[in-house]
Length: 94
Image (tube, rainbow, N blue to C red; front, side, top):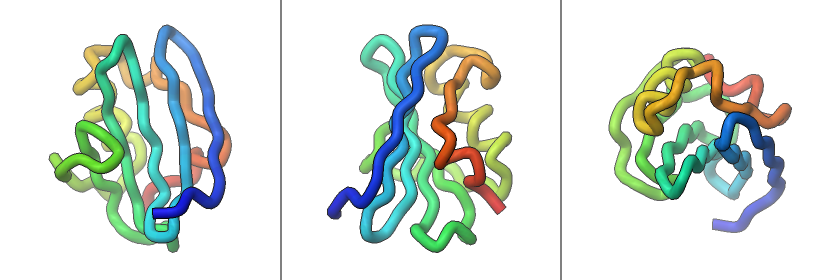
């Protein structure tokens, strides 16, 4: 997987990193060594997959970005509104 673009954001002790690879758009959150990731196909029309890490096994799929953020926040033990979202990732979801 080759990274094509990347962006980061930080807030509330959480670092968010958005990358685009040959196959996926991936938003990864890191808080005190704990991670959660949201992935979507590169075309941006498929359901969002929530994973424990960027390349981990899928835990659940969602149509909406808000639902995926809720699950990611739960994995990190924070409120969804605490998650920073880099600008290029703001349009993830269907």
